[in-house]
Length: 107
Image (cartoon, rainbow, N blue to C red; front, side, top):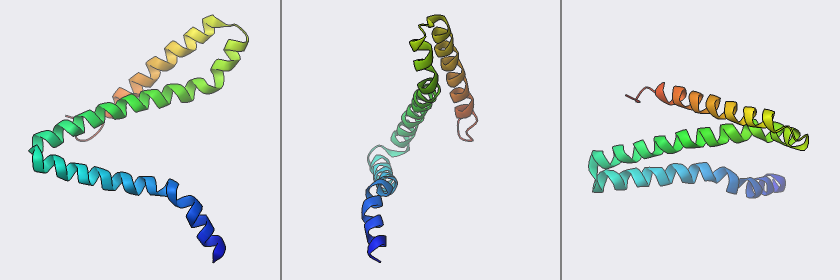
């Protein structure tokens, strides 16, 4: 029982972020609907979708480049480094747009 309590104590701060995020978004939605109406809530959701696209691009590029850029940089192979960065940006932006447009409520 003591080990379970210790694991809960250690793991709760990380696990509670999702719970607090849901509560925050719910309260924010209630505030926006009560003060600005449906237009304010729609504007907020459009801004959040734009931030999601930006985070997809940011995380996609960083995950792609983290493992390969140091190798090219250490070998002073800047031609392949530029090619890799350019292609990863194009592919990531393309897939972010495709995935965002496939959402049921996009149009």
